[in-house]
Length: 118
Image (tube, helix red, strand yellow):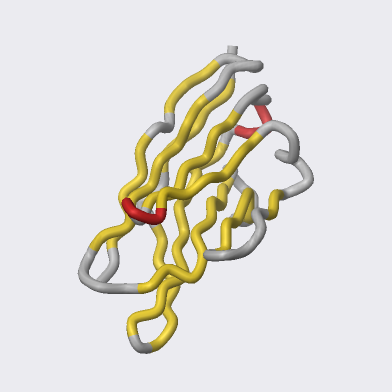
């Protein structure tokens, strides 16, 4: 069983920055992709950014130029640097990993709250 542990959420003023971290652990597995999703109250969960192993990053249009996804493969970690934050970025942010352990599975973190407010 793979576990994803997130950290780094919090309260920030508009225009501020936050950095989210997520580390995957739990035995031997191969990571196919890691991503960040978010879910605001009353809205569906949406993809924010994805980083496929050996592939190119991709971002939601709403965060392009402001957010940067990165990975540390040695640590099985993914990060989301969020700059120029806006109130509409307020949501619970979830780490996601697609891994291969024989078959392919998708795992989710527990979520971390990001609130952008003055």
